[in-house]
Image: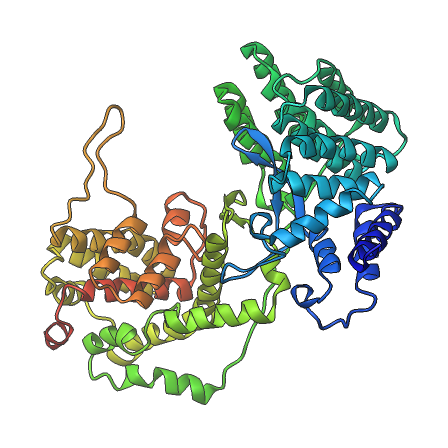
Length: 581
């Protein structure tokens, strides 16, 4: 026996011993520990001098799984690690050296455990080595044998699922039928057991339902599982499986009604935010069903919630600022010379309430690095009525929410200062008359007499103590100013009537984006967006006020929107000329 043959024999024995473990994880760990027992821990696998050991380590390092490809399942064999530059560890099966493949082939004649054989035979089939078709059939047989050596569980279900897909890939009907029979048997056994392991049952059913012609018994299994598992999330999955199999429209409709009722029932046994989440799920299911009556009932249930029903906690934090520091911040208003210059100073001196965009992004990135755990949880934003508004769907969405959160924090800190600055103008220079303010605003070419007086009245309301009236009347004027700026650019943004949908302008967020593409300062763009119309967070005050969800508006938020209105107005005015007037 040659030295190489002796190594192959020894490695095969280690594989067979590892296969006696109680789980796939334990088997893999035992094998790796044994093969690396004489290798320093800092030596990478690709630098191990022994070819048989290196080949064996690589063989069991691949991640083999069943994934959806459209509406079909397929087996994926992937390296454990993918580097940013395209490197992988181990190498992709197609790129493995021939000498490594020869070791895999040699091991198949020495390994006796089904777990070890399934992996080696599958890799030879994946590489299309020799009579690849025969290796696929052998691998499917080994997967079945390996699965039956372990107790029913996720490992066993996973092996059966892989084996079935391998058998189907080469049209090995006999082997596939044997695995399907085992999957059905395991599913029945799982339902009849005392333990509640829906994850195992669902994994088995996923493999069965991926068949072109699933066995007829799966429908009864799904009905029994619905009774066995009370969890609404599991019942939702079960009903979706049944809907996917239903061909009759009426049957599908009944199943959708049943699914909505699952979530309504779950909501009835829940409180607070959990109840709201279940009712939201009921509405989502109703919308999927496209049943108008079902949608209306689910929407009414969700809308019936009130903020006090959600059990949300309100946290209040305060900070103090030295009086001398406050006076330093307000000093520019005292030294402006007149109320016109002071109004312009609201944006020229203090800048956007949300802060500098580049600095905000840097702080958000720093927070993500320092508080990694907080980035793992997805937020769902609620509106002023307590109903869900926005849930990020991607990393980009989550980044947008994080940025809006930080900008909102800046607004909360800065708004009181801005409110004092705006009040200081009236204290120092007195309250201008409506005609004086209107004349000031009318100097901008795009501000007609009506808009100028509307802006003037909003500021007077603020200075007279009616901050809420000032905010509620200035907010729609912000959109008027933005729309006038966009129209002045010869941008055709008005949409004429189509069918039953009347003519209209696009939303404020869309109009702000147009201004941004034409040079609007990015920090001010973010301020206008986050204050008025950012679905990813912030105040989104335009929609909240317009729909009646904001019932009270104090001086700080009113000052923010008044400052924003002056800045946007100034984009079509000569501030120096306006101030001189």
